[in-house]
Length: 191
Length: 221
Image (cartoon, rainbow over all chains, first blue to last red; front, side, top):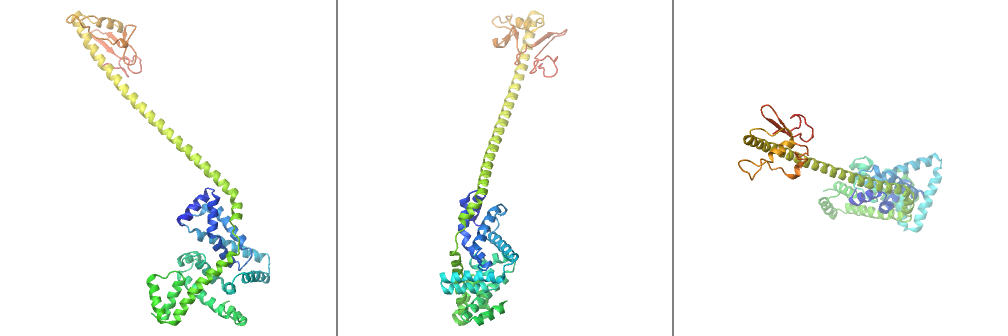
């Protein structure tokens, strides 16, 4: 934890809600991106992010001063996402419904933001989870390669090669976007 | 450096692990290799555009702050109460510890003072007994006999004028230490004076004010 986080956590532990509010302000946006990508654009993102912070507050005492607060927060969020996805399967929601929801959201994005941005996001969401995860942790959570390797329990070399491969995959995907047929082929290859 | 090394450096760049020295090596390579230059620019573009695009998705969302704070408020209240209790508890604990320390120091001080006073009183009694013994001997030289038994008789005898120096008495008794015409020791008990066949005994009952017949805390010399 850096000094600012340590102070805010200390104050939050003493019941200062504003201090915890400052921590929410600092990380909610990046955490939302992380959760959004994990759930593949599910509309429940905001609920999961909210739940992550609530859970973090309740477990704040377990956090040691030497721990990385952000990594700890992302771990809570990742676990909640996994539980949520498992629950979704239990509820026997068909894959089509999930995909429909995802497309709804993606479509919404496309209408409001620049078209190239929407394409990029769609391409990212088609990427296998292991590549997408390192991209989010590296560029949004701003973890170092060492921190990602610690977080995912993988070697640093593996993380570097995944980032490089993600870059290549995304470029290939974007090049093929206008041609739907070739896009499908590339997705098959990745799978 | 070849293109394989160039790719390795680009992957280090993406991982945020490219040192300045290696960055210079990469810059040198891409200045002569168009393929790697393209690769590097794409990587830079990849990072920036992804970051921008991903953060745009978050902009559509609302901050969970108010809902989070509302949910955690009851627990925060409990934590505030606990923190307040702990600070009061610590304050009381420190105050009690300080009080104990002050009392302990006061007790130690009183003990030291009373010990010093006791030593002083014992020394005074001992010196008075020595002076009284000398005075009795002087009296005996002048009158050929020892004063009669008992403290009052001793006081009466030693208050008489000396034969060799009529302006002086055998002993000067401090008026504050005389009660019922008896000379009191530093603890307020009359000195015990008894004649024996061969001489006399004079002693103080000591701090316990009880005649232990020259044993225990009685002071003879």
